[in-house]
Image (tube, rainbow over all chains, first blue to last red; front, side, top):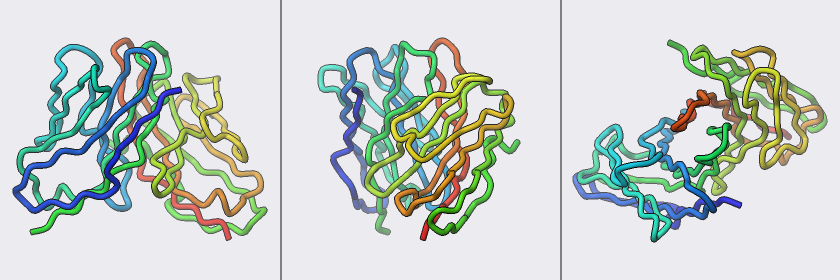
Length: 116
Length: 114
């Protein structure tokens, strides 16, 4: 069965500092990988996705993520965090070979707090 | 440009009551999904509909039923609500095509069962 682990429940950074959110997945085949962001009281918004090809993917709001198959990881990074980035972030994995691409397995989420 | 619309936004039920959560999407997506979100557990798939006319169980289907009314609408029904169903419910939709497609989420329904 597929699974996703986000080891950090809560991360606090200062505005302007760099950020890395960790994501490790377990999946038997080629995965589709996603990062979503959720602001309070809102639904989830897609930040970026990896399907194939270049292992470094760029997303919205200046985020990027790197797929490392050997480490089963898909960590999210941002070089300089803004106060508006405070939110909860979810990593998710899906089945690259199936037809129901929305059957995603989500990690537990990482809450990001940004200090001024 | 509504995307995925869920109603209601908030609901309080007593144990044993029933209700239906409504979801509609205007993106002409084939697939629709219901997830629940609980603190520290991320999102878990309740039911999904890969295409109009089909529905399948997800990870946590017990206590729920769904109806894919047409291509646009996918409802979730709680026949006899239990406190364990207190959660935030998200509807999502996606296209089904080679190369994959991300989920598009509604803003959620916050349900409390007392």
